[in-house]
Image 1 (tube, rainbow, N blue to C red):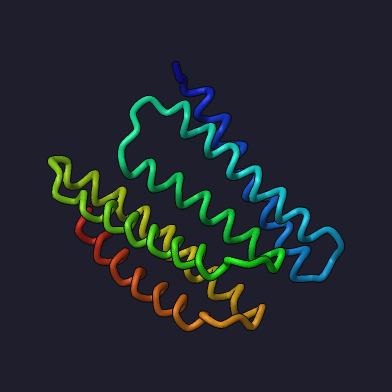
Image 2 (cartoon, rainbow, N blue to C red; image 1 turned 30 degrees about the vertical axis):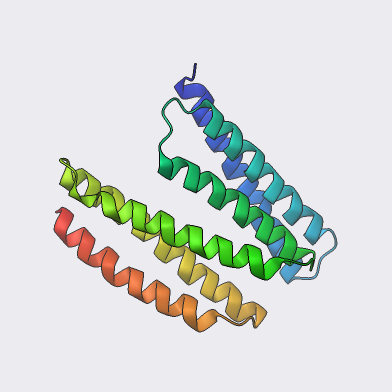
Length: 170
């Protein structure tokens, strides 16, 4: 049903959507025209192609469904915030709940048979979470948004676990 080419194609299209989203955010920060439209396009592209990527996946586990919900909540939350629409706090709280569930599911899988490989995978996940927190903290600082301190703390906290996890996997 699925092959490597389709999987790579969808991942590449998702990466293009992320690039479009970043360009839209830069447009918005610089108050250039069409920033919100570019951000909307980026969120829509990411959501559509992640859903298609999810559909072609042969074996789906509970964590795959959680990731799909996370992508949709992230996109909806971003669109609501970008266009200053209602229900943003509700979607934001749901998003945080699903992030906590996702992190717990990812970290709870450390007790499996292939512990070293799992530690390396968790180290990679932690590395990306660190990058997201620190990048988010910088964006929050540029935009003078609240929550910068929390993101900074989370980034430092995750950096500690990432470095400890890297030592264990060697």
